[in-house]
Image 1 (cartoon, one colour):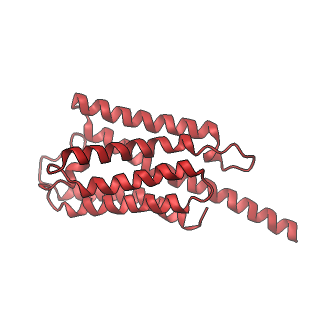
Image 2 (tube, one colour; image 1 turned 90 degrees about the horizontal axis):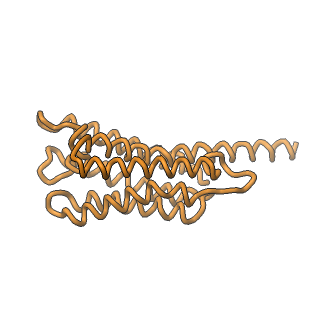
Image 3 (cartoon, rainbow, N blue to C red; image 1 turned 30 degrees about the vertical axis):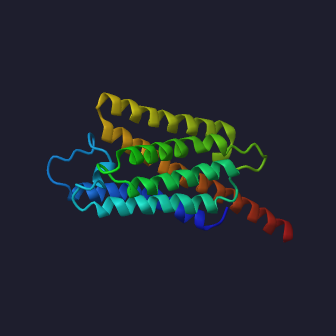
Length: 199
C-alpha cells in the first residue's frame, strides 16, 4: 500500500459527510435529511448546489486515488473502488432533475461497486491484513450490500429515503479507510521485523 492511501481513504468520508452536513445547513426550511436524498442537495434547484456538487466530485476523486494507492489489495477490488469513484463523479455531472436516468444509473453503479468490492478483495495469504481476510471481507460486503438494499426498499416505499442513503453512503466511504489502517498495521509490523532481523 502506498502511504498516501491513508489520507485519500480518510478524505472520502470527510468530504462526503462533511459536504452533505454543510449543504443541509444552507437549504431553506423544510429540507429533511431523513426524507430527502443527498442528490437533492446537488440538484439544479438546490440552494448553493455547488457545495454538494464539489463534495461529490472530491469524494469520487478520493475513491480513485485510493484505488490507485491500494497496492496491497487485489486488482478486482481496486477496480470496483475506481468504478465507484467514477460513478460518484458522474452523479455530480448529471444533476437532478435534468438527467434523471443518467443520474440514477451513475448512482446505482457507484453504490453497487462500493458495496461489493470487499467481496473481491479477500486475501487468504498468511500475512494478509486483518480487514482483507475472508471472514471480515465477507461480512463487510454483506453488510454494505444490505444497506444498499435498505436504501432501494426505502425508495420504493418512500420512507426514510434520506436516512437509508446516508447510512449506506457513509458506511461505504468509511470501509476503505478501515482497510487502509489495517494495511498500515501490516506494513509497520513488517518494518519492525526487518529492523529486528538486521540488528
